[in-house]
Length: 297
Image (cartoon, rainbow, N blue to C red; front, side, top):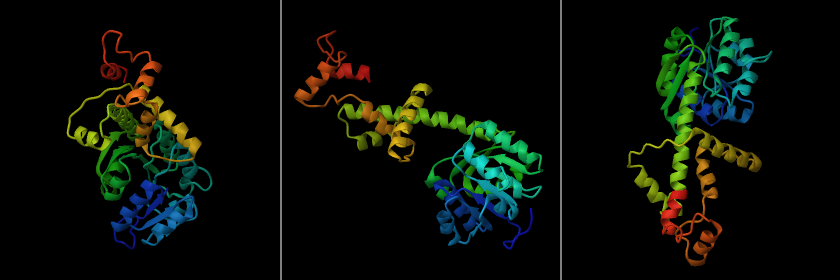
């Protein structure tokens, strides 16, 4: 890696300045790295320019001036757009340079990028991150890395600026595969939390106090991944129709909308709900509305 005006620190090119990317690029700037940035919407790049970053007009031009190129974009299609083609980063990167893709993509996308770059003697690590914007801002991300271990070893000082831990998982695609495993657990956990909140609200519990109480417990919950996927798909469709982009906690709202009326509903409302739902007849089997509602949750 070439020397820079900042001493022995490598020159960094950063592609993708969304909520996560902008914060990671900012951390590298504050750590003293010389950083050049590229983003499709130039305004976000200008925000970092005021902090000392240089702006490039294309991924190719950015890579031509960098020892290490980092990318944090939406998906595999976005990675292909900024990496491949005449104006992609691989067209400008020098042999021996390094590309670190921080995006969450399929393992086959990571392997494809690795193999294409390898033919040009460019090294690639797939290094998706676990965490959200607060962790990105504080350098507390967890990073899963796939690729050549020797390249991972060389990049550890840089990864330490971005995260509290970087785990080498194996050859190309291993980091992306690990992130998918982590996302499966996260999705199932959020689905379980959404169900618990919906049940608590139906039972008349104050949501804030319920969350505070649950935070102090140790609970093992294993709902089906398929159920979590269905709720996530429904929420994604709602967001697309409304042209909004919420984070994954939006599944709580989906569960609220799908839940039956609360058992705390007064008089006529409770009677109407019981009449509409044949599962909620206390005279059948001698069960009360309360016990019936818990079984159907």
